[in-house]
Each structure stands twice: as C-alpha cells, then as structure tokens.
Image (tube, rainbow, N blue to C red; front, side, top):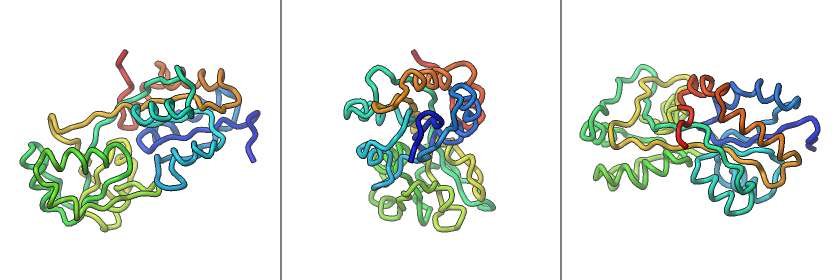
Length: 240
C-alpha cells in the first residue's frame, strides 16, 4: 500500500544509487515526505525497472542511463519533456582485496589482463553491454573472453562476486564499484577504450504530483547536488 501524500518514490539504476542515498535528506526536506527507494538497480526479469514500469508500479521519478530513459519516454512511462541529465560515469575494473593491481594502462595491457582472468563479472547495465558487445570485440578477444564472463543480475554488484572469490575481475560503472567492501585497485578503462555514460532522471507518467517531481529533478541537477554527486565517483553533468 502506498501513500502519495506522505511518500515520494524513486527508482534508480545502480550507478546513481550512492548519490541517491546521499541526496535523500535534501529530497525529503524539499518534499516534506519520506523517500521510498523502490529499487537500486536496472535489474533483470520481473524485478527490473522496465518490468516494474510496464506494471505501472507506483513511482515519482526514475533515474537511469540516458539512452534507457529515452526508451521509457518513447514507451510512455516517463513524461515527455521532463528529462534532466544529472551525472556521468566511466567504467572501471576491480580485483579482490589483496590481489595484485590489474595492469591496464594501455590497450595491450588491458587485453592481457582480460585474457589472463579466469572469470570476468559483468552486469546488466551499460557497462556490461559495453564490455561484452564492444570492448572485447575492439580488443580482438571476444572468442576467448565471452565464455568465461559471468553475468551478474538481480541487482547484485559485480564487485560483490569478486569479493567472494567467485570471479577475478569486476567490470562496472566506477560509482558502483567504489562502495563495495572486499575489492580494491578500482581502475578506469584506459584512453579511448573508456566509455562515458550519462545518467538522467525523469518524471513518471503516473506520478500523483508531477510538479513536485519536477522540483526534485531540479534539485538533482542543480548546484546543491553537484558536490554530493562528485563524492560518489560520478561527475555532475556539465553539458547543455
């Protein structure tokens, strides 16, 4: 049971999760409501954000990769014209705490690091798509690396799998790796092999207070939120 008079509901993908929780007190102060975090991952299957939206689960704002939010707007889940870009993030790799730092300062070093790994953990988010459909192919190692890559779904972070010793390398947005305990040497992809993703927020088409939801988006994209966003491994969006 939800109460739109006392609750403000948010769905966010993993990349913005740490920033969301740090900004939560400001959002509660602005709205005068308790913020309910519906999910903190793009997810997979029935618990994924697309599935939740297709069921019209109660939510006021959604924060996901910019390209994904565009798809939600096209599907009618998000109010046309409500999108604001809030942050950008690069992709990184990490190893289990105590393991040697991965050598990935050049394309060839990264290639060798990926080839030597016994198991590479990747997610359902933009980072996982990039790793498996672009980066492996650019490095010429798709045939060798795809079979030993492990998909991590259900909202779990790839770093957690590596921390348990079930994979050698975690690949994910930097902001999703930094909070994980038990991993270290979190390192951005090198040079032109890096992919910067933009994360955007929009108002749910069935929010019961779209004006207040827009005010929250203004907060998330404004000066007050920028330093908080930067503290979580993201960069505040600086584009037009």
